[in-house]
Amino acid sequence: MITVTKTFFPDLKEYEKQLERIWENKWLTNRGELVLELEQKLTDYLKSNSMIITNNGTVPLQIALKILGKQGEIITTPFSYVATTSSIIWENCTPVFVDIHPEYLTIDETQIEAVISPKTTAILATHVFGNPCEVDAIEAIAKKYGLKVIYDAAHAFGVTYKGESLFNYGDVSTCSFHATKLFHTGEGGALFCKDATLFHKLFYSHNFGHNGPLEFHGLGINAKISELQAAMGLAVLPHMGTILSERKKVVDFYNQHLDFNQLQTMAIRPETIWNYSYYPIILPSEAILLKVQKALNDNNIIPRRYFYPSLNTIGYVNQPDQAMPVSESIAQRVLSLPLYVGLTVEDLEKITTLINQNAC
Image: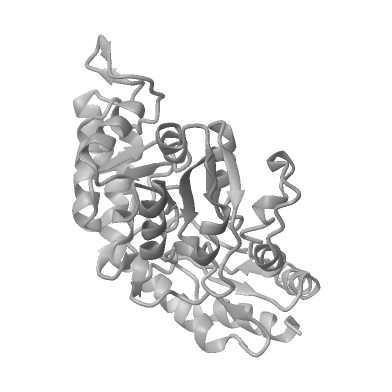
């Protein structure tokens, strides 16, 4: 079976070598030696601002919204994974949707100002499939209106924009280190922040609010990662060159062999060094998408309707008047294709042939 993604497993001996350190230290959690080492190595690798490793990629959004959202209105995108919107509502904030750019698939920055109200406290935008938002325009809007900017950069590991790590933009950026991502710790994620005062709040918030063992800076939750997860990250990180080069080969094959007279894919924003995180295709209609999906499934190829549905249509959002025509249309027609280390030319020929035969 060819699935939409597969977890990259380092050699077992490489992982065991890291596990041996844990057994020697007798330390499993509470920011042990491996967690601290992984944080430093990732900061160096990514050339990023100060970071905090967390136990998944959703809690960082919730922490950022708890601190910066202030239970206000959060301008956001309807085209993202559900965690983007659910985190807003979970933190007692209100999502206010802005439609997306039809080619880049990120929030349409030209529509943001029109929905700003006295209740607006922040903008939460997603770098969709690792494709950067128009960060300069968003920053200018935020400064003009005194808003905070949070980026859901779950897919953006290693992406640079205008020569800078994409994680260095915004007041807070978050990432996912889930097993399906190109870099992973099994489960995990991270917070990135350039402001020292805000970073301090984020840090104690991810560790119950602790200020030493007996005192507390303030409110916090448990978002700490374990040494076992950090061990996986330390075993995976040395393979990033191979992971990126192999994924690029898959993307290049799709770019060369898919029939773009019948479909389109995402345009990468200029001045971006992308990470080949996902390969979405956008088909002419939902009916054709279902036809293509069935043809692939019948041949044991399992793509994913990702992102679907458009988040403004989810029941608990309860904002039926916020129609998002571009996002709703693309969400009905987008299919993410298999993309991982280990796909063969034969696999890719089969995938592209089936798509080209049925995308009409």
